[in-house]
Image 1 (cartoon, rainbow, N blue to C red):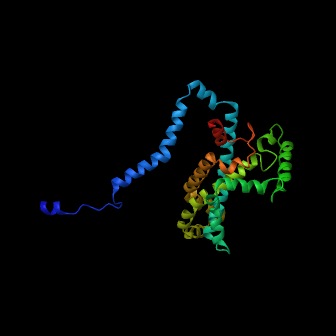
Image 2: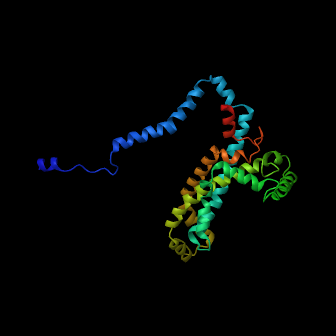
Image 3: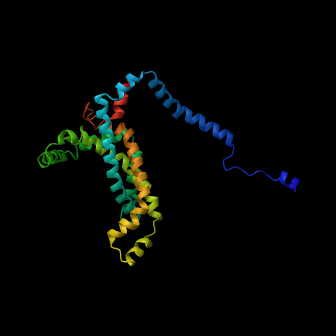
Amino acid sequence: MSVAASAAPSPRRVLPGFGLSLGFTLVYLSLLVLLPLSAAFIKTLGLSWADFWATVTSPRVLASYRLTFGASFAAATVNAVFGLVVAWVLVRYPFPGKKIVDALVDLPFALPTAVAGIALTAIYSGNGWLGGLEPIWAGFVGRLDAWIPGVAWKELLGVKLAFDRPGIFIALTFIGLPFVVRTLQPVLEELEPELEEASATLGANRWQTITRVILPELFPSIITGFTLAFARALGEYGSVVFIAGNQPMHSEITPLLIITKLE
């Protein structure tokens, strides 16, 4: 038994050359991720605590925090809702051009961020294809001033689409939608329609089926997609910098301010 056991071949690894592959992976990640991150920390450690605190809490920086986190959260929330609708339609309904629509969902991934920003700016600027929406938006903001006084709606929302705060929201929504759709699609494909049929058989109406059967199954994936879209929006630079207007204290995002500080 001992001779047979010693002669038994060792189990084969799924990944051949594990040691060499692991070493290559660690070197690769160190060059691309760890060294740049360590350089950022080393640069920060060169500041005194007072200088660091004064830098990260200056009024201009705090204004960029409010705008970046607020716009990212709003864009991710909208994507969570409409991304669910898009994923549901793509999974549950056959229609002409379905494959084209499914491919268009990945367009923000395929486009370079700078190209996306320039395209959105050209579309939503005053003389662009959708430039006629600017007076409508300005009128809506003006009505908010009349309906809910005491809030600086023009300062909060902006009066133009491009080169103002709405442009930031549009860009962040554009780049975040695929994260929600692609996170929800596999879960919806695994969600059996028989569950909805059983719910209807037991006397539930459509709204009860959605809230008590479908949404509990999809909720973890919705949160995952929301988180991915929110994280991407926080660090987005290329698609936003062209359409934001970049006005300090108004439409300047934190990634742009970081670049400005570094330069």
